[in-house]
Length: 210
Image (cartoon, rainbow, N blue to C red; front, side, top):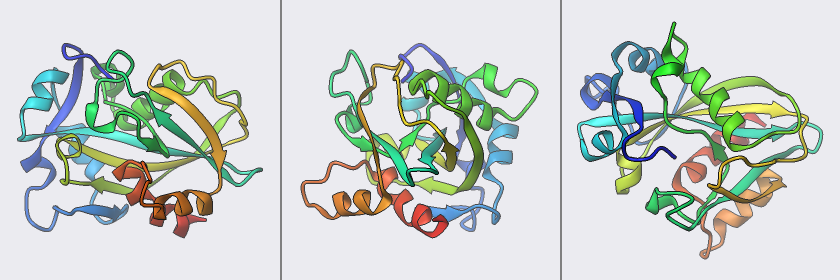
């Protein structure tokens, strides 16, 4: 999670959604519209605070679910609840299936910034003990239901690993475990569930993939 003055990349909403055909809420499968190309050709560089305060902008996030193919389980984790560890109050204490973060200027040098940011964030956040492979884009996530999600735009990826262990380097990750998708779906049906919105949206695309 960047601090207020950290430089990140963002894109104008009207570049991302130039017509009604481009706009959606929820999930859109990849292959219909190349939002990555739009982002990488039209990004702006500014502080995280400025990007968050400007509602005409979207902050792109590569959001990757990490799947252990041997155990047939995903890593799920709980986000930190304290401001000092994680400043995005709307997501504090939430369960998440997705790792990822904001794009930074270094990521987009010579192009390919979205996947580069994904790989960098995975390294910074998880400390996976094994290899990450078969990184695949499933589609896009856009949710306007709360203040946090309204200024972000997700690119949903899935990646395979032989790792059984996380060694989180980021204080944002407070607790983790390996869990089947059916177990996540069961958690999601519990009225006391604390699964973040993007992870809820990701459940059906991940189910179709498996």
